[in-house]
Length: 93
Length: 448
Image 1: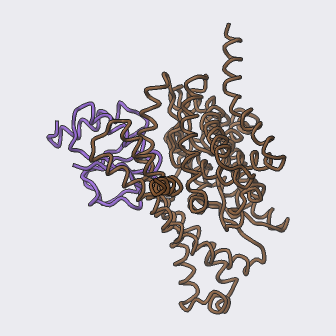
Image 2: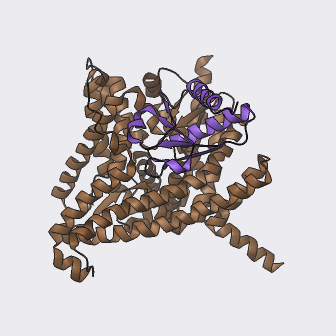
Image 3: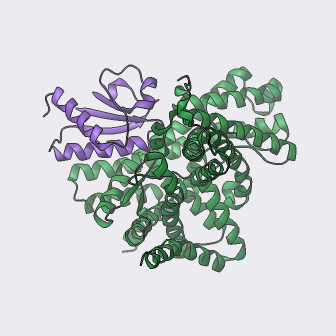
């Protein structure tokens, strides 16, 4: 499975969030999930199964089926809950 | 033997291979799997080559921009854009930039380990851009070899800890906690905005009590906002220059308005390509950097990219962008009246730094703070580049320049210091690097 994290420029905040997601996956011993980050313009539905994005940008993102919207991109607790919920939903954990 | 030596020096003097080598070692040290080491190393080199390709696209558009501006207004116009100037810098000083970046990150960890400024600067693209700026300015100042790398590393490491420290008191007010620092090289603008808010914003209500339309959201997609603003500039200049100029001097056979529209989108395409390259490099370097600092620096505070403050005051983001852009237009008017070089308002710096300045102004001085603070930010990023351009050396002749305050501020400081000779420049950088240590000693003595 592939997770794509999206932010305005695709180099700053999205890299941070993707590093945090990788840490969560490592903690759960999951190694078959790939995490990448990119900008709004480059993001396309073929690139990932799940997209993670901050609340402030979520309106600008269209065409994706499975989107996780974060109220706060620095809140690791929120990220942890939402990623685990998604993994459970996808029968990965 | 000589062959091997040539081979090794060739790797070290080619920035693409050097980046690959740095990543390769970083991944080995982290004991990554063989497949990850291969993948990471290749992606890093790929990223560097992509930046070079993007630079080609951008320069094509910028050259037309420069010629059209000159023809339309009779003066030189500069669009500040970090990605554009950095891609040019990497073409010239790629090797120096790569070495200074790695040394600077090490100095950052060292300062954070031993002083009270516990900030680990994790906004990798700004680290890269600052490394490129420092390389350009120090090389223009005549430094070379080991001296150049050492001074560059110290200056970068200082910037990576000092700028987050400068704005941290206000970050605490914005986020309500002490854990997250701001790692974005627009800090001088944010600090100024907070000072203005403090001075003039007494009793002003928060921006967050206003109901604002969400219609500015699309500007946060940089490809859209860059295309649109560049389109305004390009079309106006092309119309003023006239069809004959476009056809005969520039040698363009297509319709001149279509040419203008295409070149504006081409500029955005160049920025997008460069960002893709930057992303590939950083995806390998930053996690390793964070890994080391997590182990080496207890109680480290991550200094993160500026959009982390946006959710704390969403209206201030919109107000800040608009007022900063207005400041850029007013500043441009002043420069036109004064004659000489013109700095055009670039939408990306005004959006990101203006919005952040708005959030800082609001945190200290409410609406008035947000409005006036971000307006001043807009003026600052319009006027300061004028002083930076002469010290950029060969890069000073490009139609673009660095756009955010700290690049410009630090560039001006060490650039003009270089006029007094290498010894003065060296002492200045050493003194700057000593500041966090002296400050820590001071805090500890006072604490007792």
